[in-house]
Amino acid sequence: MASCLLTKKMMKKILIALIFGIFLIGIVMAETSYCCEKTNDGSWCQNAPATDCDSSFTKAPTSCEATSYCKLGCCYDSQEGTCDHNTPSRVCNDSDGVWAEGASCEITQCTLGCCLIGDQASFVTQTRCKKLASLYGLEIEFRTDLSNEVSCIAAATSEVKGACVFEEEYVTTCEFTTKSKCSGLGENDTAKFHEGYLCSSDSLGTICGPTEKTTCVEGSDEVYFIDSCGNLANIYDASKINEKNYWSEIYGKEDSCNYGSSNAESRTCGNCDYYLGSLCREAKVSENPSYGDYLCSDLSCELEGTTYQHGESWCADSAGVEKNLPGSKYFRLVCYAGEITVEPCAEYRQEVCLQSDVSGFKYAACRVNKWQDCLAQNDTKDCENEDARDCSWLELSNGKEVCVPKYTPGFQFWSDSNSSTSNSSSTTSTESSCSLSTANCTVTYEKKIWGSKNCVENCLCLEGGLNETMAPLCTSLGDCGVKKNYLGVYGFND
Image (cartoon, rainbow, N blue to C red; front, side):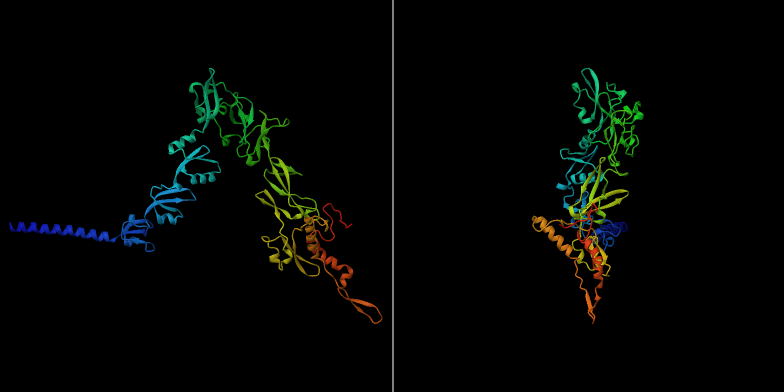
């Protein structure tokens, strides 16, 4: 009995020791549990032993929910328009987001609405909606009256197109329209919408059928067939005039004839593309499409045997401008919708036309002529710095070098001091600019004993050498010196 009682006592002590040991272990574990701002394996805001915490970041002997750096909230990305729930503040800041208290993101920036882009819908923030629109290059409609994703998607699908079949005056007729508009058609709400179908489909049993007529649609590039009820059908394709499927179901642009080409002036295909240089227009009598009265107009232009694409611009080769002669000026020409327009740059060559070529497409623009401080430059590098000025480094025949305007400016050189204020200022500008190239040449002679004299200095001036030396400088400063005008005629003083 004694041994039995002893055993029970021993067992009791062992049990107490185990319980106490577990308690001590719990205390030790509790003391060693930290909130690691970042762990060694790269995880953020985790409860772990101190040895697992990245020493480069903050740690605290408490739960992460109680810390400021790992407190959960809402992270708003102002660039993408997204809102992330239950995000630690440090994680949000490191991703360049804006952190706000409230893990459920109940802030104004995170208010959701229905973003309608074309025939697609997304239940997102307004900023995100604008971001999506910029990515796809489409117009958007953001509706705040739709409070959930289901109603948002339903709103998008209501804009899908198809055949709306209904009874009218005891006749089964049809209108090609959207799903939302179909519900209001027909007598006694008899309208039925058939998504993706044309009104000329035999399966619908309407009075509408195929025709040989075509038309243009405002806001669209292409030529379209129309049915006997006046509804739009598919893009004009002469090869499918009698094909039942083509008159039954909607074919997309990419599934129509010669997709990816402009089809300009084609008699058989109306798949026009504005960005490729064509647009629907009424055909001329001589053009004679295979069916209908419309075709893809060629938006390119032709000038002196050269073809220019729609939207191209280039500098005109006007008389005298290549030599900056008096009376000449720069022009910019633009090809738009098959017509060439002329846009003159500023008078007196105060603007010049500059042209570039990007993958065979020409761009031109009138730009201010930056010539005013050319003469003040003392070296080639500063003179020919195109970011600052339009100048060229000129070497004269006497060995001197000078910085002159690259594009010679023009003046109202015919104005006099009795003219209006604007003309007087122009005259002053002309005189002051041209006088910079004026030079005096003093010739020195040596007198002989018998009365004769010999030239000993600047003798070149006697032979007209000074004029030849200064002429390039004179003519580059403006409408100065001896010049022909842009018509090839010399000027004169009366």
